[in-house]
Image 1 (tube, rainbow, N blue to C red):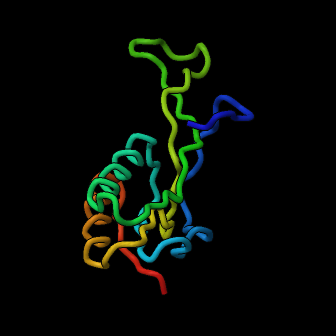
Image 2 (cartoon, one colour):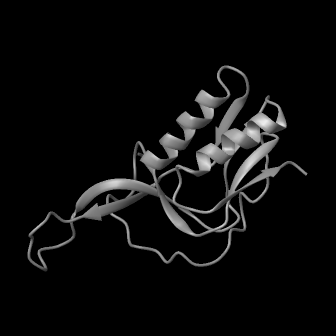
Length: 133
């Protein structure tokens, strides 16, 4: 969740197009790249982060390149149509195909690839493990 936002509620955006930024591994040696466009919730990001840090134990460093800054609103159950927009329920990060979401450094290639594969199972998108070129 962001510390401060200019507006409390946000419009729904379209999920089309491909990524033009954050498409290369910048900080680490290995990265997890998305192949689909999707909204990834803060809970899913945290779940993937926990898998990565637990698998590599105290070796290696993990970078999270995406941040959930888009508020998603939900109206309560059994509420009639109208009466305005619902309250903010959770936050998501909008990712496009080609976005590098996680990066890793300081571990062997086999360990990094296995950890990133396990983290990809926690996310709602198809992912590919890439290395620095």
